[in-house]
Image (cartoon, rainbow, N blue to C red; front, side, top):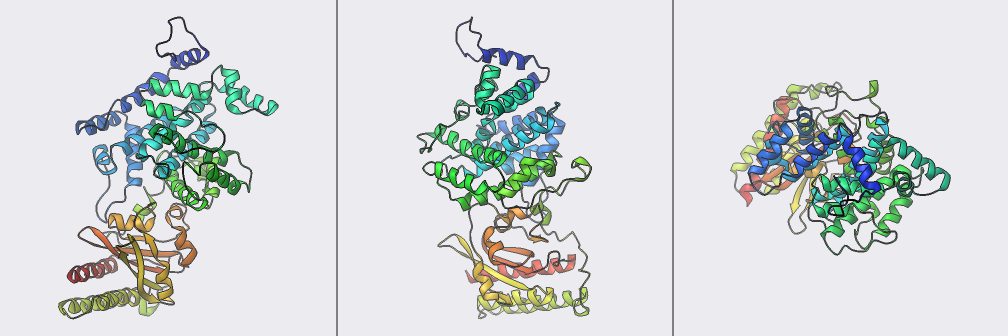
Length: 534
């Protein structure tokens, strides 16, 4: 593996010597083969799915972790099952998404088993978070392929990770130079190693078979304002640079400085990635949830990560809790995904709330729901019954039967491709309904997940660490509830409405099997009523 790529036979640069040292390490050939095998597979035909699946299946640990992450990323329909094969993961998530997951897992598994393991984990978390941020920011940067943005950002600091892993003594010396001379790490590392981490990363990435446009995007950005990219390579480089700069800021900024850092970055990238400070905050919140799911899949304790604690603070989220015993065991880890675990299944009974009043016995609740269901059924037979009246009957039945504090109906506004609250029951219901006005495209928060996947979802506590990143900012600002349930209304596979019901105290909504079945039937009658009106 030569860095010269066609230079003279006698060329022997410091970078060549570094590459030879890395190649001589016992674990590097296996790492190179794993990454190279993934990169050699293209998404050009159906056969590539089999190739990718078989490549991943050769590594049992990689397969297990990838399926955990695939299930965390995929929100199945209620009762629709989970992803249990790599082939299905490719079909459901897409070829490029599975390849991104596999590459990130390969790098994590291979670049950690050294004395400096904690420092490497910190660096990997920073790199992974940058990749997740880049994927979310790709569209704003004019990058067509979000997964390519993910990989580009993940590679942006590959050289630094390799240097920390294979040359720990030299990197320690570089940090000492930084402290004594006040120079950048890149300059200090270049002086000690004879080549910069960026040069090292680019040479290795090229050897591993990454496309040249990704290799070129690994180059750092010049100081000052970043102009709009002239081509796809420029745009990949820019979005990777912004995401990496955000993560570097999280790792280096002092307490209370994060707002200033974000404002400066938004201004610096104003021409190339037009985003607001608020949009950056939303992206950080959502992607931190993705970071948490990855950590669960690889048994990584975010509570012990200084970077993760800082990242959560920047995202406006509670700090991750430290796992007892120094780590998260696979068996003790949280469900594969907080929202997926919150999907309501008719075959999953739940106990009743302990504080139920005599009038709220299971028998009384079921009787009220069944009676309302019968009333709605009778009304559907009457062609003269206005649609809104039938929908109100459905909401009222849910409201009185279950004892919710609010029940709100949202209807799709086709002209804006948004969901808007129409009416509901409960104190100040109309004012609350007006708070529900959100787009049907964008970052997949809990509301979009329910609608896009036709999934009935119960959120027991909006502040639960695994749930908080998926609760949109507009909801926190305007709705006082801590627990709620969502029943999407789809006609011909397209979302046309959403039934929302809540209570103010976390954990206060508990739905038993029979009640869930009746609630689903009421929602299905709303579907029928809307279909009949079309």
